[in-house]
Image (cartoon, rainbow, N blue to C red; front, side, top):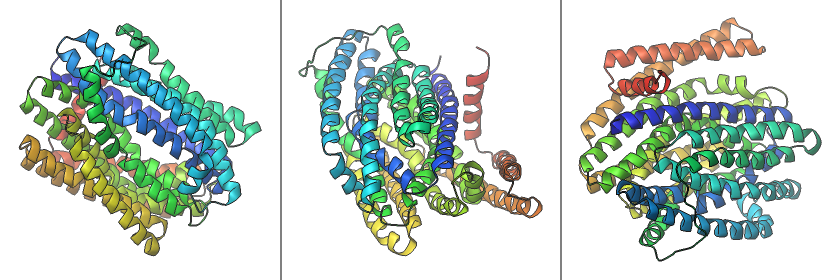
Length: 519
C-alpha cells in the first residue's frame, strides 16, 4: 500500500469515527441543556472541565503524543522495536507518576483555581464547580492511559481502537449521566465523564496486546530516545496549550457577563469544532505518522507533499462548513437545543457566538496539520514562539472587544488569534522546509472560498424562504428548514466544485471510497 493510499484510508476511518463521536457529543449536550437549561448550573458544569482538561493536556494530550510519535516512529522505521518499547515504558511510568501528583495538588487547590478561572461566579455556583471539578479529576488517569495507548497504536498505523474510544467516551457520559442525574442532578453527568474515560481506555487494550506490548516497570531517563523527547516536549506543551489558554481567557471574562454566557460560548465553541474534529483532526492524525517517517528516512519531498495535501484537503472541507454555520447558525441551534429549559434567548446568545467563532474555523483546522508538520521535523520551538504571540494577541483582543461586543467579542477575538497563529506558522514552515506548492494551495483556497460564499448565500436564502412557509414552533418544521438548507447547500457546493475544477474533491472522494468499499 502506498503512503498516500494508507493515509487516505486512515483518514477515512477516523472521519467516520469522529462523525459518530461528535453526534454523540451533541446528543450529550442536548440532553444536559434540555434537562438543566443554559444558566449558572451549566456554566458550573462547563467550567468544571477546564482544570482536568488542562492537566491532561499538560501531561499527555497533544503535547506528549506529538513528541512521542516522532521518536517512537523513528525507532520503528529503523527496525529498533525493542528500544521503542523501552522508551514507551519509561515515558508511561513517568507520566502516571506526574498525573497522580497533579491530581492530588489540583484536588487540594480546586477552590483557588476555580476562583482564578471564573471570578464572576457566585459562591454557590463556584462551590458547585469545585465539586464537579474534583469528580472529573479521576478521568485524567484514564485519559492519560488512553493518550499513551493512542500514541503507540498510531505509530503502528493502527487507528481503529483509538477512534472507537472517542465514541465510547461520549456514549458513557450520556448513559451514565442519564441514569445518575435522576438522583444526583448534574453531578451525575460528571460521574458519566469518568465512566466514559474508562471505556475510552479499555477498548484500546486488545489492540495494544496484538501489537506486542512490551511494558517494563522501569524508568530509564538516560535513554537517548527519552532524553530527545524531554527536549521536544516543553516547547510542544506551550504551543499546544494555546487553545486551552485562550479558552481560559474567554471563560474568565465571560463569567462576569450575563448568566449562561460561559455555557453559550462553550456550546458555540463545540459546534465550531464539529467540522474541525471530523475533518481536520482525522486528516492530521492520519498524516502525522507518515510525515514523521518521511523525515526519519530523509524523504523531504514526500513530507512537503503530505503537508500540502493535508492543508488543501482541510481547507476544502472546512470553509464550506464555516459558511454553513454563518448562514444557518440560529436555525441549527434552535433545532438541536431549544427544548426543555433551553430558551429562545439562549438560542440567540449561542448563535451570535457561533457566527463569530465560524470565522476562525479554517484557521484552527489548519493548525492541526501545521503544528504536527513542525513536530515531524522535530522543530518544537517555532510553534511555541508563535503560540505565545497568539495568546498575547487573544488576550489583547478579548479585553478590547468584550467591552464593545459583549460575549461575541470574545468569540471574534478567539477567531482572529487563530488566523494570526496560522499565518505565522505557514510563513515559518515555508522558510524552514522550502516551497510547498504555495501557488497550488492559494488557488485551492480561493476556489474553495468562492464556492463556500456562494453556497452560504444560497443556504441563507433557503432557510429564510422556508421560515416563511412553515410554522417553526414544531420540531419537524425546524428539521425541514435545516435539512432542506443543508441539502441545497451540499448540492450547490458540489456543482461549484465541478465547475471550478477543485482538485481536492478527488482526494476527499478517495478517502470515502477507501473507507466504505469492500476490502
